[in-house]
Image 1 (cartoon, chains in turn green, orange):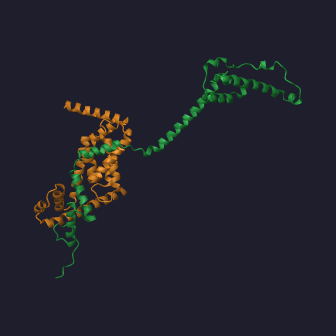
Image 2 (cartoon, chains in turn orange, red; image 1 turned 180 degrees about the vertical axis):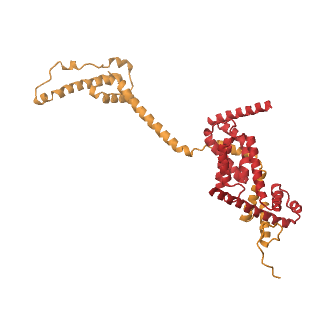
Image 3 (cartoon, one colour; image 1 turned 90 degrees about the vertical axis):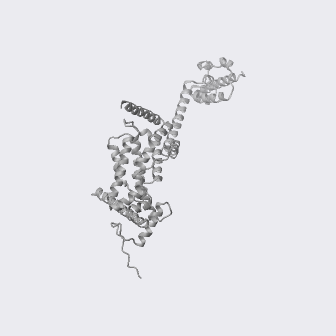
Length: 202
Length: 208
């Protein structure tokens, strides 16, 4: 006997005769509630019913599981958002230190000239000679006993008791240069003597 | 009575010290605060709203991570640390509900309203807040069941909420167990329909 066409289920009538589809869906829901594999729809329905139960009577979290969550959160350090700041701060600090070091070097070189080189150099050549002498003294041993024998700053007047030579036109034209040359030669000699004195070979 | 007040004050004082230590970078102090408040937060706030233990644990973990990251932003209030922690958790739950695909008892809009309320309503301590959250959850369930045919509501209440055996519920409803399965399936379909209608009404209410 042919079965009459099934009507769609009447949801508002709980006791209406079920269709075959409803019976199949009901079996799937029951399996899903029992934790067995079920269709996606039945799984979603079972999840909704479990959510209903959990809202009505929420279960406490297991102590050990909770402690593990806390330990993980406390042990984890989230820094991605701050990484760029760290880079900026690092570069900023490095730059500031570099500037401070260069300023300190400049101030020191101008306020504490090396006695050996300052004594020997001409005023115009002082910074360059001072740096050269300091660089040299950094790689060579220093002998204190000879320090007292170092040349000291003094006037250049004593260099010019004798008149400059005027034998040639060139010399006359360059009399100014000759004076500078004499001063430079004297200072070079002083510098050389001072180095020997510091090395202890004087 | 006075002893109870003193005890509560002592607890509040200790909590304030923990917060101060936590804000100065003491991870152990943060851990103590989370151990103290986390289980209640999970049970009263996250689990009812997210509807599954897995989702609630993920949200709790995310909440803790945010707390560790942002503890320095917390300003002490007389009701303690919990209201701030609850607000962080509600925001995490809101994100989770917005990302979810399936129908749940709580909608994202419901939690969004709770987040707003958390910033305007006078904060309360954890005991009172937990009680209110639990009552609100039960009322939500009761309201959902009240939308259904009483026979469906009874089937859901006995089998799902009270977790009574299938055969026992079938007998109570005077049907066979196989017929009860169909009844439960229909009750579930009716519940989904009621929740979807409520969600739709909520959306219309917002746009109106």
